[in-house]
Figure (cartoon, rainbow, N blue to C red):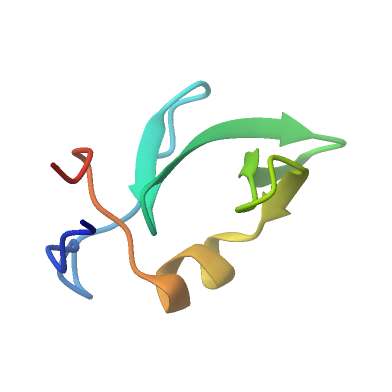
Length: 67
């Protein structure tokens, strides 16, 4: 079961490399690639997925894994 708990709109995403946040039941790690930041994780089929900060905000995110 996925939690509906997400960080408030005003809560900024972490900016430290290797930070981990959760979105839609999956972990995403912050990576610096070619001078830009991206959140890297997997989709529901286990394929690699890279998201921008804007993408992650629109999907909703949390500092903790949903139980």
